[in-house]
Length: 98
Image: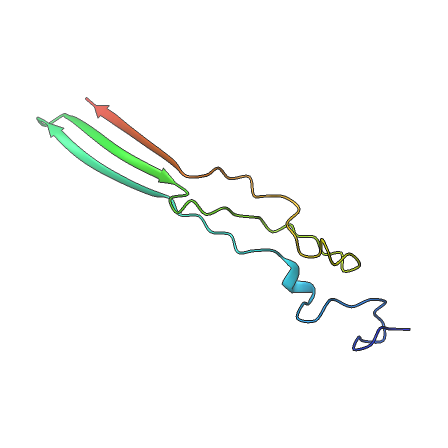
């Protein structure tokens, strides 16, 4: 017999406000940026300086793997792991062409 407010073929239902597709996890967001400046030395040589930033907003992404076990309300919709991305990273570099 199906639980109350469920279709007849379900043996259990998601809690109120949730559906199967609502358990896909948080949105993923990352912002990477690069600034560069090209300095010329004559006609054949140049120096390019650049500054790069990865995950500039330093957002902690929890990933999309969330616990979907409706039988345990204490762990329902808690992240099972974090996304494998580092926190904010900045780097400075250069390139000399001749």
